[in-house]
Image (cartoon, rainbow, N blue to C red):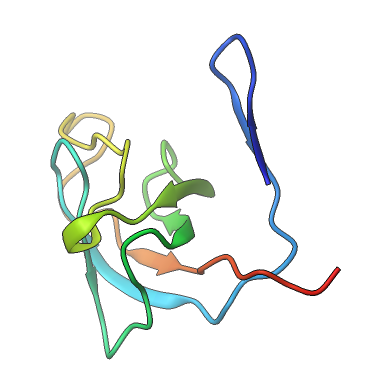
Length: 98
């Protein structure tokens, strides 16, 4: 569940996540693209929690777009997002029973 507040704050809560996919790198781009290891079970439209070495996006929720782009994640600012520092994991939110 996610709620966007009038001041632009996004509040999100997940109750279940699937096994995290290892992200060996994250690009510096207008829409960041993770390099994923192994055979990740991720598809466009999946919702993930970004766990990255970059504190500016760590623990934020993202929706995967085409080509695994992280929609709304602009990481072009090399001062905030130093090259090579974006590695981490991407746990995918899952729908649990209620």
